Amino acid sequence: MLEIFEWKFEDTWVQKTYARGKTIKHKRNLKLKYHNKIKKARIAMAKLTIDQALKQGVKAHKAGQMQKAGRLYSAIIKEQPKHPDANHNMGVLAVSVGKNELALPFFRTALEVNPSTAQFWHSYIDALIKLDKLTYAKAV
Image (tube, rainbow, N blue to C red; front, side):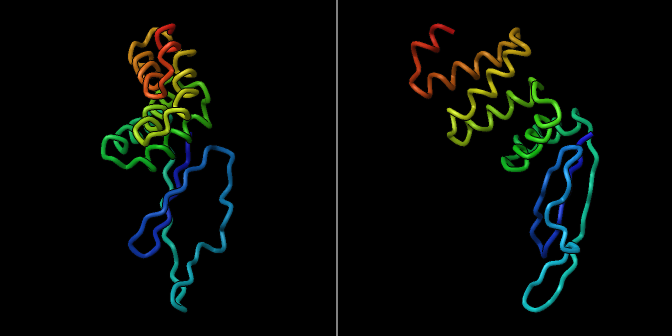
């Protein structure tokens, strides 16, 4: 079970994701000093299953909310380091923001767990081509 914490300060949502067993690092009574006024932060906490977190991550990813999607995928990977879909999606997310080199370990993990999924191979080879590693891409 993953725990998703959200703090609301003014009109801005700041979301922190913690996997099971982690604690909030900055409690400070969850108050925010703003122009000599103390405003209380509202907390919303949701406990999600791995599947729910993955669905929310995919939804956020499709909506262009890359940071939220990344936090959700990361929380899944912390809980289940070899989760193939979360690793693949994290790799796709990294490629979409131009971090092709960072995507490779995620794609490798997804392929290690589930080598029969064609999409995982396609994403991995595509990232290798974008990195000009053509000989390695051909060998794969």
